[in-house]
Image (cartoon, rainbow, N blue to C red; front, top):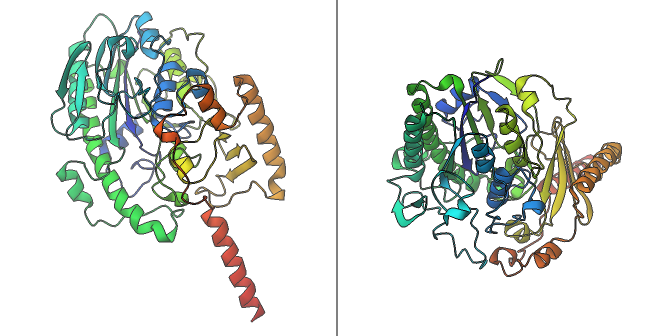
Length: 478
């Protein structure tokens, strides 16, 4: 472990933690990912504390929380002069590379105006090799730009596989270099549109029975199953993309000193709790897969690590594992002693859940901005009205019984509320009304903050329990 490892960091867009074969999802075809899991530290409680594309990516790049780096809704420009993960590793003697979806240049017009624009070299945050694009969800007709060349190019075929081939070539080209390398591969799928994976993968799921999570309301189960057929087809394709990357590492003879990380920027609800997409504090939205394989790390293979690792923690943890200094601008926690086995989780560690302002689906569903804590056992969330959600995920893994107003759990709620307030105080987070942040930062013109609720969200399981209780009462009276 004296020699600094190479790093290959692979992350998908909108891939929930439970949607893998190794996590027990019977719908998944992920043999490559499952083998990687058997060789890795599996961070079983990894989260995306602000489960949206741009906020996650800004936290990944800076090690900061959304209200610090300022990207707390989509398409806000990240400060190009930030102390980035690429610059930190570059100063530590690494070659750095980024391939795939970027989504950090932003669109200050608030109308997606830069999504197909050239990302200037200054906005590539210090990566030596940059082959990417701002944001495109047409995975079969996908553009990219290379370094400072303004000429638009196209990925060949399904972009995630083309990007994986490019990453494999980068690995081969740099395997025997004088410097270690840090490569980030950013896939766009399985983010919607859901039915655009290559034909061979979609055909595997056509008409296939899908086993749904029990927290999908009955009226939405058919819709959820059809959506998931498309998602799982994308996932099967990405598994083959991962194979290309891992084969390149093995064939180059650098497996022993190459750290491979696989994760996702956030999950997707797929109609669990009666809602869709992300932004929410429920497990399907916030929990993400996180595998770290490094044969040079003793006792790492096949080990589960129950840490609430969040996006701001990734930069300091990777730097810590490589023996490099963590910049003072970083707010996340360095969990590297836990990966090395020098420290063990107590179960009391907590990730901060934060959604500073309402936009898109929060507005559509009539929900409010929130703050919360995610611990090994509990999810506690409050909004500007007060305590909103409390789940004992050990007793209620699908979060179908909200205990926020349950008198028997008042002591737990009070403890978590006190811990949450301490975290907010340390962050300098005043938990203002979401509109005030948007006004303060000049973001009220963004289209995504102008949606209106079709109807307020209602806890489907609270209604179900009330109806069941009424039925039982009527039955007993007859």
